[in-house]
Amino acid sequence: MKTAGKTVPSLRELCTLPRLQSTWRILRKEISKAPVRDCLDYLENDATSYSWLKQIQERLLDGTYRPHPPGRREEAKSNGAYRVITVPAIDDVVVFRHLADYVYRRAKMYEPPGSYFSRRFAFAPIGKKIDRLSDTDYLAFFDVWLRYNNYRKHLGLSDLFKYVVVTDITNYFESIQHTLLLEYLAPYGVPREALGVLGKLLDVLRPTAGHSASPSMGLPVDIYDCSRTLAHIFLFEQLMKLFKVVFKDIDF
Image (cartoon, rainbow, N blue to C red):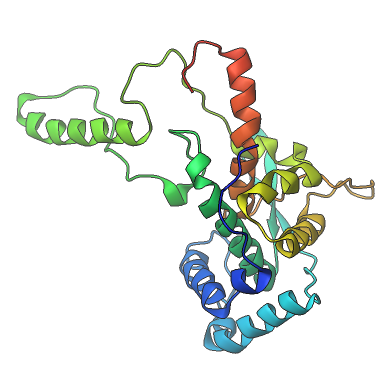
């Protein structure tokens, strides 16, 4: 497997207070856009963010950090189906997102071209669909066409391809083994202790099956892109190997 080729930091270097504060500032903006919100939007955490994040940091560094049991709710999908959304405690959201974003920054150089997995990294829409165009609308359409052409470049579609593969990344969540995921993340320069913390988070947040025994498998569906980020990195090698076998004519 590819390696990040960078020095592996210690857990103390990874979880400095300024870094945790940076993660919280990003999350703070996303919380206000969440479909289901806390009645106070974690104002108490924001008002005391220094001492609160300091406590999280200390628990991470002294080995006493333990994830809390999450809340779960059902979200409707099409055709009467639904998905279970996992809602971690706010402390666990910060730690989960902090570790996931760190790994992604390290792994991004190996990201397959044209692959996108989150609305956070999506580009602005190119405009409404146009089926018929009058002469007076030509100038406006030309502007849309220019933006669309640029949009294709960002998606890696500036050339002709025999196949374009589109997948729903959440379909893979339940099949991802924790031990294999952590093994795939290690070469990207993740401290051993950070992998241990991530393993604890996954063990507590993983999908449940009633009273049935739950193996160390499956990522929770969360609204903060933590699982999406980890699944995306996990699929770097899995999908590339699969596509090279199935679609031999594709230039990866």
